[in-house]
Structure formats: C-alpha cells, structure tokens
Image (cartoon, rainbow, N blue to C red):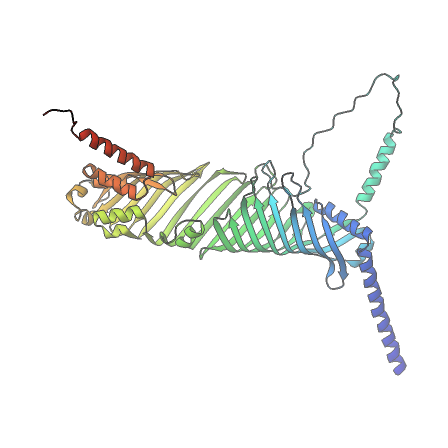
Length: 496
C-alpha cells in the first residue's frame, strides 16, 4: 500500500513539475524577443494600428498578460498616444502559440485612456486606417540604348511574383483569431479639429464580440458622460454596434439633472465631417440643475422638465444641425429675472416678481445656425408671457413677444399704465406687444417703454439702463441731456 502511495505521489509530483516546466518554458517563449515581435506584428495587423507592448507573462488562470500597451497617434499635428492602457490581457489557447493560428478567446483592456481627434477632413479615423495616396507616376524610359550605365539587376516578372508570394506567406503565417474584446474602467475623449472636447466618457465598461471585418457587437455602461462640457449624463447604458461604416447606440438610457433620458444615436465616424443622427426623450429633469450645469445662473428657473428632441447633422460642422423638439416645464417657477422684478415693482404687480407657472412650454425647430421658436408660453394665474422668433447659435435673440394680464390685474393699474394694455382675442385679457433682442447673455427689451408709455419714456430708459444698459448708452444719454440743457440756457449776449 505504501509503495502504491509513493508511486502516486511521485506521479503527481512529476505532473506538477512538468506543468511548472511547461509554464516556465511558455513564459520564456512568449518573453523572447522573436515571439513578442510576432505577437505585436500580428495584433497590429489584425487591429489595423501600430501597437507597442510592455512586459509579457503567461499564467494558466489569466492567460497572456501584458503590463502596458499603447497605440501612438498618427495625426501630423498631434502628439502623444491615441491609446494607452495599464494592463492588456489575452485569454488564448496556450498551444496555439506554437501553431500558425493564434486563437485569442478574449482581449481585455484595463483602465485604458483614449484620446480620439478628428483629422483635417473632419473624420474620426482609427490610427493606421487606410489613407488615400496618389498613384506613383511611371518612370521615364530612355529610348536610346547608347547611354548605358551600371544598374541593379533587372527583376523579371516571375521574380517579382515570387517575392510577393514570399511576403504574403510571412504576413499570414501567424494568423490571430480574436473572439471577444472587453474594456474595464476606460476613459475616452473625442476632440474636434480645433482640439475642443466634443464628448467625454468616464469609467466605461464594455463587453463585446468581434465578428468578421472588425464588426463589434456589445454592451456598454458609462459612469459619466459630458457633451461639450455643457450637458452631463450619468449611468449611461446602451448596446453598441460598430463597423468600418458606422457606430450605433440603438437603445440608450441614462440619468441627467435628477431625471431620466432614453434615445438612440448613430454616426458615420470615417465619412467626411462624421454625419450623425439622434433622438432623445427626457422626463423629470430638474430645470435649475440643468441650467446651472450648462453655465447659467442658479435659481432663475425652477421646475421639472419633460420633452423630446430629434436631430441630424455633422460633428465637424456644429452649425449644420437640423431637427425639432418640444419642452414642457411642470410646477415651474421663474424668479430673479431683473426686468420682470423691476416691472412688477413699478406696476405694483407682485405676481411679476416671482412667476409661479401653471403652464410653461416651448415648441421649436432647428435649422443650420438657427433655432426657431414656434411657440413659447409662460402662464401664471393672472399673467401670460408668449413669444415667437429666432435664437442664433451665436446667441443673438430676435423675439416678438407679448405680455398679457387679466382684467383683475389691469383694473389695479394706474390709468396711464392701464391704457397701454389693449384687449386681445382671449376673453378677459389685455396685452402689450414688445420685442426682445440682444444675446442670451445680455438680452435687451423695450417692454418697460411699452408698458409705461410715452409720457414716462425717460423713466423707462432709466430702468433699462439700470437693468443692463451699456455704459456707452448711458454716456450718450448724459451728453444729450447736457446738450439740451445748454441749448435751453439764455445766451449772455441776448437782450430782453
């Protein structure tokens, strides 16, 4: 019995020793300069980009592990790496390393950082992608045999064919087969031609299957997304479809400003100017948080936003976007808008100083460089503000607006103010029309002048100056006032 136990122990120890020897041999093999060069060359060929690999090792449980991998940027005006990753793992059939077909079951990138910039043609193109090159011009052949000079041996057609066959054999003697590509805790930044961030994805996890022709199908989860550093999403989840022609996110879901979004996105990254299309629906977004994150003033608008937007355009040409949408504000409140606050104080209408909105909605469509407001309505219990017009992508405003009040409020006004509100088609309401111009950052309006009337025009001008009139306008007014005073003063040479 002891002899059998010893024999079994010896056999087990021999197997373990053999496995250790095989593992050591495999590590020595993959760490050899020749094998690393082969792996690097063939992975570069398969992925279509130049790879730089770091330290390589093999374990039975982890497969082939490379500590450090990078893909250099190939755009002439950019420096650094297109990709660098902390760890690069390949789960593969170990014995396929010694065959002509390298079977890679899974590629995993751990903590990769990708900076993907548009090229000069507005394309997001992978490094190493085929570029259009002019055909070489045929060499001139001298018709005269007299001027003979020593030259290299001529290459016959058969020799050239043999060389091509030899190159083809070298290039395909070690073919990798990749089945899955995964990304863990990755960060991606997409830049336009000027180097400005178009979109940023942080803490991205991605699992996919790689098909023929570099077709990827998988599922992505992103902790945080930033779009032009103005609009932010969290916990984005979506299927991903990618090939050489398109990138699709067909079923997106995410959170933003305390609410939920759903939609789809499609882009042709390697086409000129990278055309795209998308549609999105949103609900329960906190208006104040959304405005603040976009760089607007805090506390100006409160309420819950719902709506939808669908558009198409080109990522290289922001002004070329086209689309349409609508927005609804539930339980809305508009406050701290200095023009309405001042007007409310002048007219003694407390409701104007802080509008609690019973209805707030906007319908609009987008054409290149312009947002057309088809309908904008803000309604409280006794007051209604409405507008139509345009908002340029440069922020310029041109809105035809109307302030309407019901008879209850109108009867409380002074006579000189009351007569400026004329009855409209809506029963029980009177209104005054006014215009909004200027920019989104510095809007201008003739509302005060329209409401207080011509008799109090100077008061309206003074209020307009206090609420944002430019220094040049105030200086110009002071100069005109001084000139009128001087002209009104009696001349010292005049006689009674």
